Image: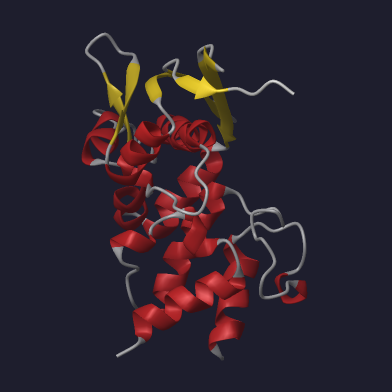
Length: 81
Length: 147
């Protein structure tokens, strides 16, 4: 799976969205699409499992998980180098 | 003209389903707990005695604390910068009630907003946990303009 496919798969399983994850644009506000703050924590932990890393302390906040775009940026930062 | 603004009061409310917290604890275990809650919060919600099959934590109490953290965010109204979950701590007092203690970015946001104090009330049943947070801002001089 590509990074985008993995992110969408995690969102489908954990974000409790009101719409299918595959229908989301990269910049769709995930909280506006129905993801609760609590669900965003599950998304974070499931992303760590999927990509085999741990988000840094500075990334443990809502804004990191507000869109596919912001998640992709965070994943890129964590997997770079 | 300069006028003294009246005290501003902000209110935040949030609800969390304890079953969702139970599912997160079951799925992610300590990783979930330590990313969201402080050591004090985790200890406060640990069951001292439990029956066979009962979870190690009072998930409804964890859910109420999560709701309180989210309610605090609604009071802080962050734009852009978002505090991490553990920078908002529900500190249980000897008498049993909780006080909110902020650190890091959450404390900075509160200072920036002029929030002089926060008060919280938690409640939970088996199917729902809730928290209300009230924040009050010190009256500050501010410029007002006549048309």
